[in-house]
Length: 535
Image 1 (cartoon, one colour):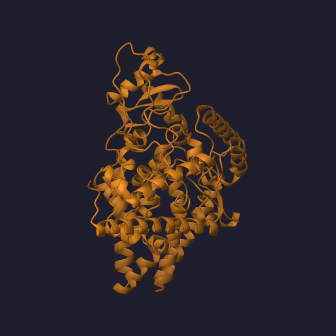
Image 2 (spheres, one colour; image 1 turned 90 degrees about the horizontal axis):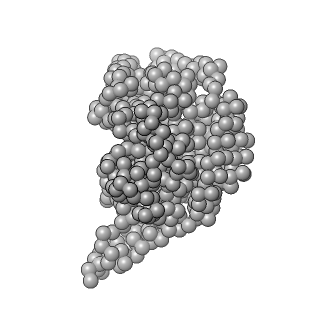
């Protein structure tokens, strides 16, 4: 086995393995074959499939503990020459040729995708299967023009995608990681967590006391605040940012999310880990796939295929009606966001979308138990037995759920107005995270409201996307390190005040809504003229 792990594999040999259907990625110059544990991966199979053929070193380091990385080395089947030029994964439309013994890389090497000009899979490229329809439909031509302009803007604003420039960014990012470790920012401040637990218990106790005395609306408000706040700790636990122990942090997260909040931690981890790998990609990132309610990119008008949900996201009549007014509907719809999370959580658990074998297999049943306990204490004991009338029960549910709306605003605020262009696999992990994520500036005393997650893009306060496993209490401390990294690397750092960030998101949603209206008008005009693209 040692000799197998030490053998050198050429680029063509790696391509051939992927052509055979093997799940291969590169980690620290090593070729890792993930087929044996693909179904058991606690973070879901999609995260791995998005990295097939790519150098996943930075992604693996960002999302996995040292122990997990050590386990991963058991599946090394060879080494490659560094730096590795990533392939476009099959899940993204990449094509791979079988390897013929004796072939040299130079003999058959060809670009597998137009990297740097967008490496999109076929579903996103085809606005129409009929070339004539495309030529005659000004709406479709406009959509392609918007895509091109978006890519041109990103290519002009962010560092070049050549190997030398991106290699420099990778090196600076890894130096930054060492600075973060040296500063102790991966260490959890348990005193801060004890303060938070005290605050959570205060919210919950206040809600129960008000419930006892019949102040149902105020009770609902404080229960909503309780749910809003505990989500941040569940988030840390899902990223193993509390004890850094997989099972301990997972159980903490399940207690908070499932038992206390009625939401599946496993569903969140499966979705959120994909979000961290393919941030803001309309075809792949579930965090921006919200049709029929929201479209953050005009690319969604062409009914893209979602690789996360394994279905076409239809831009149907309902979507066309809602998206045109999405900037006005943004806040009202987010008031009901929690109801959709209940649906997604039960879908995940009932269909068994998480690991059914391996070290995480028990979590499904623990979560189902937790969800049952939640609906017993909230649905039966609190709503049914403690509140006398159906109207008061209805108001209690509506108020408690609407109060969690700021959480959904925070989640969407960091990404909805940022780039959705796919610049291909040549773009470094650090640049991609900063290009697709916005940080929100606010006073230190307001951190508890945002849970520290206003700093999504950078490595410590913004840590959340560059260093997901750093406890959120340490995020603000890293600002100077991140800013220095951005200065050295030339990668812009998007930082907005809370009001300005909201304004940017609403403006972006309004612009996409206007494009949807223009597309509908163009298509209606073609139908009225009776010109359907037939020659």
